[in-house]
Length: 275
Image (cartoon, rainbow, N blue to C red; front, side, top):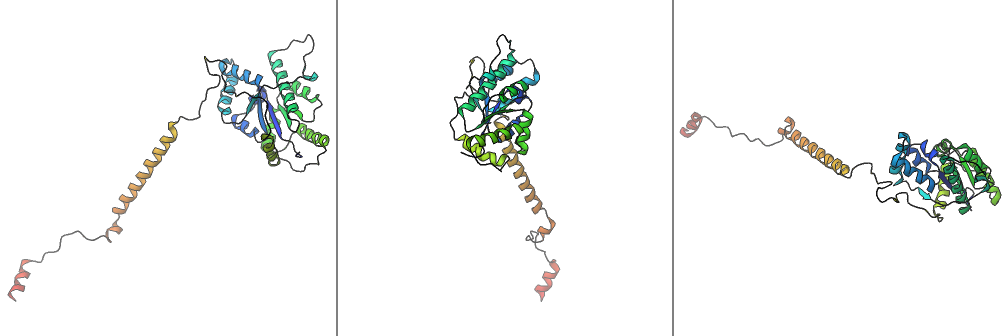
């Protein structure tokens, strides 16, 4: 077992909404990225009919990003006392989604005991619930903390504490290496493990309208057009060089003369004949 466990990142909508697609790519440097099924369903609703233009923009951006991201969607779930609803307590839709995301992260920590599962959310209540779960391989951080971690390699305090608990629980030696370089090796180990049952995010449960259509960044004909323009520019440059060489005055001195031979006057020819 490695001294630094592989990292599994679990995202909710709030974590995705505070970052851009380029920052989502940076998150992949830290570890394997998972989207809970309930978050996928919410993203589908936002993509179809979001009343908030900003959330609709995020859903469409994630649609384009996901195709080549390597992220996975999972419907795994597990219950814990800290993730239960109090009797008679009414929950909003947002609260139900948050609890479902927490249960998904807890289930992944049970499925991958040799990995550190990190839930990324800006819901302080959800992060506090996770803190109350006595698991050495489960913690929660905010999206801002994850962004700093992915850029600088400096782990958030909650992650460092869990790493220490993990090493103590498994009797591992202290690890002096830090940052994304040492983490990358651990992530390669995590990729070799089997993953829980996942569902491609592009799967369409409503045949009448695709949920997430493939939207390439550029049309297919753009690369061909660029190649054609480059070829035409190359031919134009070659033609100009040939014209320049042929019209150069210095070059004409080395070319054979094409002028007609000089004719002597007739009088000179007669003198020669009389002689």
